[in-house]
Length: 117
Image (cartoon, rainbow, N blue to C red):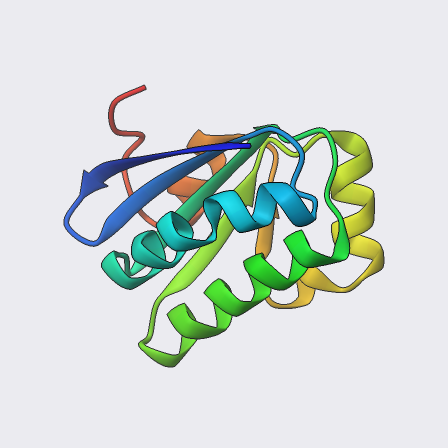
């Protein structure tokens, strides 16, 4: 599992996750994910290269989203693998974190331009 963080503007951070978000993957990315959550008001999470998500991955996302909400921020997920999206919706993650089809959609709904690709 790999994580990339990109600043898209003041308080806007894009996180791209690449690999399986299982126990081992979550342990690898958790420190950087927490830093990204701490630096953002709006955290966009690209899940296009995440083909599998275990409960520990869901916990990681929810913990980050709750931390963002406490400081008036938000997390938006986008480009989910269909199976990952099914898991996120069936576990109710979409009740706390909005799921979008594309990055541009996630940015537009948040009232932000598309930024660098």
